[in-house]
Image (cartoon, rainbow, N blue to C red; front, side):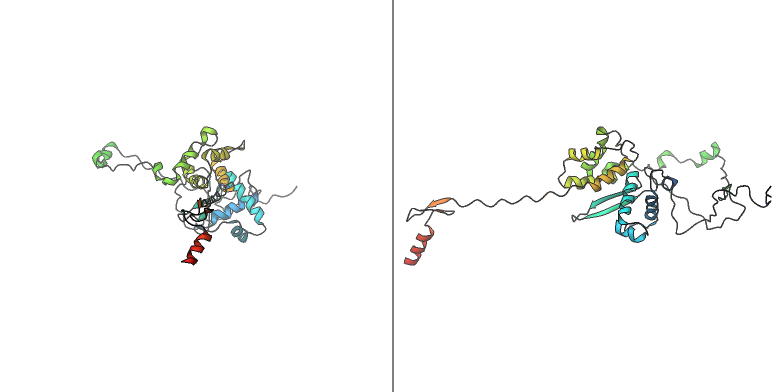
Length: 298
């Protein structure tokens, strides 16, 4: 019978974490991304790299290929399509006032959830050995002490007259959307009438409206845009905004060709005043031969 060492902990099997508190050079990754059942490992790793980059960094395929090793541009493009389909990434093209288009990429750490204010990270502190949790994780923090509610008399002393209370800020309205994107926003909001699964939030409508505006400015009919966005939806659609962002960027129609300018009509026929021959001229008079003879005689 094998002897059991008395100093070995009972939970020495499986994964053990040795964590320290980080206050700089770190990024928070949700388990929705790290343990996503449908994303491949290259897609998860690429999403981690994108979320760790500062705002304004270049995240094109060539720029990401220069940051990674072992991933070709084709694999990076496939991973980006996975992240778009799952809602972790949105790639659109925004038109500038001078007519040029620039790429716009938005990374979401939790698709469909509004951003919340994060707590301030405490000072870096290494977790002493022996204070980890059951699997080596850091010990839970002490519960917060709840203050006692104030008494009715204290509330009367602290109460403010209703007239002095500031008015609450008005709720956000759709008027914040530029005028050139109103038609696109109405089209996106009405997609659920054609396809109930394309139910978008106001935040998603404002984010996708510039892409639809680019389609309309290229001559696409609104009915054709709606039909293209609603066609052949996957049966397990979980993130409609991510799918629409991918279709708006990947299926962008080309600009309409310039309309050729018709040539001016020819001059009408005139009869020469001297020889009665027909010739083209804007006004009646002599033909070229008679005009030359008259000029030589003069």
